[in-house]
Length: 416
Ligand code: AMP
Ligand code: MG
Image (cartoon, rainbow, N blue to C red; front, side):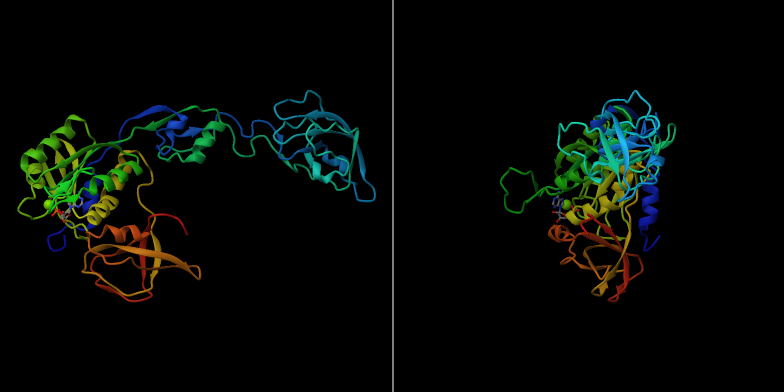
């Protein structure tokens, strides 16, 4: 505890301990994109399932071609044609070859493929007739241009693990194995509302002293991005009754997590903490971080609640630091932490000793990640977050860093 505040690490550990895994169910493969696998997958068969050609060409017995040279080509009789999707009935005998298309099964006896391009008299046009013989001028090596049965993985091998996120490539792999349904964790149900009597919903006229509600949208987008099922509950005015009504609505919706923004500080109209204390428990409401010190965590009628700060950047950073890992933990992801990259400061920076998440711009120079601050760091300056491509993480206790110092960074995107 630092100045009576919890450190980010302590607060995060306390918060994460309150979340448990949601249930899983089977879904159709296209619906599984982005979801977390609930059961490891073992390969139902060897892959490739049968030895096949990796080129359009001729299936051969490699030992037949060992004496081939430019001056003394080896003549092979073409005894068959194997289009993709067929299965050759006959064994390949010595002195013979079969025309074969990419992906078609190698006939018994064959152990290599010679690409069409390597054969002088081969015809590479569609519908081309089969020539009677080919002349091989370079020896084929055993296994060349063919894919052996089981050369990618074998039946029974674990190819995807519980906790893996299903990206397009995992979806493709499952399809390759004929697995049309897959067991994934359900999306956590996240109830979200903004608080503040100054907030105006989009589409309405902005009256004097009012601002548009940005947090509902930025936080809603983050929830969707990290796999949550969003239940937006609008805007609560700065009154006990309005805040309480929405919290109760979240309970009725059986939310797994309630997220609010604003009204958790020490202002005269900040009611969120009081309401949470009344019908639940408040575990902490301040964290030694910047931005985002007023950040509350507790439970409301048994449901975990994160009260994010009101300032749009603070709300966003608070979400990234605390809600993202919680959401991923609930969703069953095995990897809940963002990767940290070392970046080198191109300008000195100062901090106030709290663990700081500064909006930064990172670029590559001479093979190194360089960084500077993106504009001014006011916690209401959402525009600077738009200009940034990373958060630079300054540890607590550190008050200044010189040019050339290394800091950790979270990248928003991998556009490097
Ligand atoms: P508070 O936490 O209520 O003291 O709010 C801190 C600052 O964030 C104030 O300037 C609020 O007007 C602003 N703010 C609170 N909620 C939102 C929101 N949903 N969208 C944009 N700004 C907000
Ligand atoms: Mg307020």
